[in-house]
Amino acid sequence: MNTIDPNAYNQPIPEFDGYSTYEMAWILFNPIQPDSPMHLNPLTEDLIRRIPMLNVALFLMNMLHDSGEIKLTATGNLPLKLVKAMHEMAQVPDERLDTGMSKIRSQQDVILVDLLRALLDFARLTKKRHNKLSLTRAGQKLLNNPDALLRTLLLTHGFEFPWSHYDYYDNEEVGQFGWAFSLRILALYGGEPREDRWYARRYFTAFPEHYPQESLETIDTVDWNPIVSCYATRTFNHFAMMYGLVTYTRGPFRPGFGRQKEFFQATALLHELFYFKEHVSYIGAANFPPMYEPGR
Image (cartoon, rainbow, N blue to C red; front, side, top):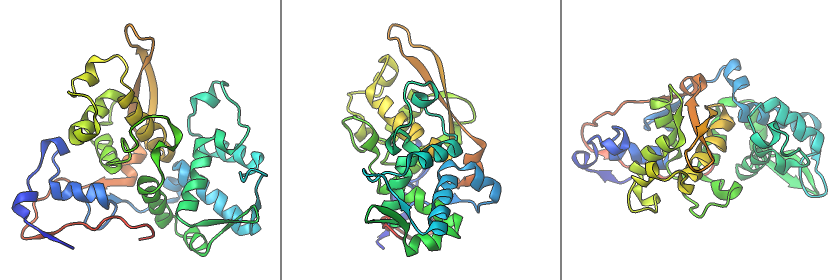
């Protein structure tokens, strides 16, 4: 680790919602560590049941453990009957499916199921051989440790899986960079429904290099801003909602554009799962956090 000057990195920064550069470094590059201001609380059976991604992961992994393997479809997907069962178990809102605009015809039609397959693969918890899916030794080990499994899913999702996979927005880093910071501002301010652009403003204030406009004022003056939609879709719809951390509602139409306002609110589960420390000024030299490494 590199030693840093605490006087230079210890001061709280308003743009970081009171965190110092040192604390933000942990949030950005290696959250959910003992020295990080972000912590995961121990799980209970009730919490496990309420976390869609974890609950469905345990369901699939237990099935693989009991059966030894699952035969995949000709295209390498989970069987349709299993996909529908996992979607029903997750109970994650999906406007396309909930309104009947789309039907479940394959694994790719249910983002949570398709995403879970990818996360288990990225984390090397499952393997595919001869078009059959089975658990790896690492997967067998985490099957009996839900706390470690949730941590693995979150970090794999946050750092390894490309968040741009499910959309066509130009900027590939928006939302994924600083994902743990987004959870913190959701924990701080999500007690009431807030519009997507409200959260986007706080995010891009902290990371202005990811906002391609001349001024952040355009977040409020433009009826519909694609970069705001990009941030909200990736952060809330395709990440936080998959773990039961946020709820989503539509409001009145924005004047002159024909799009409804979108509001997000933190769930009680977010506060039960995560604990974010307040700013602390460290005495003496502090160690700069190591970068996240897969499998650690």
